[in-house]
Image (tube, rainbow, N blue to C red):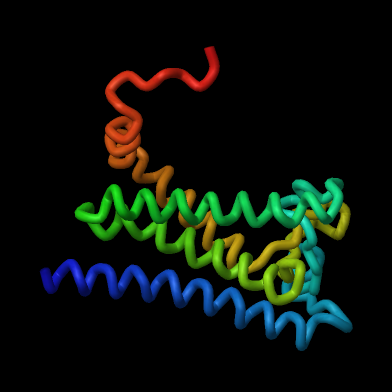
Length: 176
């Protein structure tokens, strides 16, 4: 019992730390990068303040704001609810299997809170090649979500039976 409590306290600390780090770095970016960018690696990486009113890679950016914002909240809350359901279904599993979902929630909540308080998400990491080839500007929350997905992928053999068990022995295919 005590081991379980300690496990969950550590997992919750990952979630809170991730969300806090995201919000703090966004605050620093707003304060220090709004007027000018900072080059870290010449022709490859800089810090640049960007207000992202859509989601990853500009997805949903062309949709009217009155539709886009509720849709963004619905998608983000759905992803975090999925993570909570997975945590509940796997509550007795090993730390390493639960960790990606706590990291995912930390990142998702960082972006949710930023959008609630500001109406947009603050991005500031800009990877590019001589400004000719630009990767979309991103933030700590985006990194956390990608780390979570990566951890799920590298542990997929351990997750596959859990998903199969949740869906039943022979789930119906989504597309026939």
